[in-house]
Amino acid sequence: MPIEVSDNTLVARELLSVEDAERLLDWLIQHPRGRLDLTDCTHLHAANLQVLMAAQPKIAAWPSRDALADWLRAALIQEDKIHVQDDSGGR
Image (cartoon, rainbow, N blue to C red; front, side, top):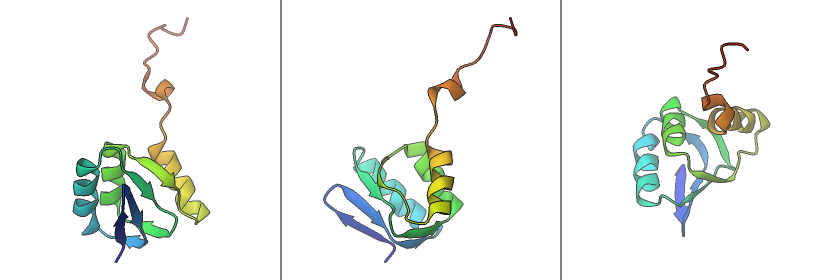
């Protein structure tokens, strides 16, 4: 089973398929302060990425696979500077 829940932590193992996105979203809605352990996650469908981007959950552990961890960090960690519009007109 790719999703296991213990206390206030959801542990994602191996592949999170499109079918897992609804369960992930439901859990995040029911546990707004919940944490995700992605250590053993090897791949996730884009639907799960969309859920994570919208919910912005606390990541307790990133995937152990560097490429996946880097990709997720880039997608999920957004600096406030990105959202600030520069109205200086180039001055």
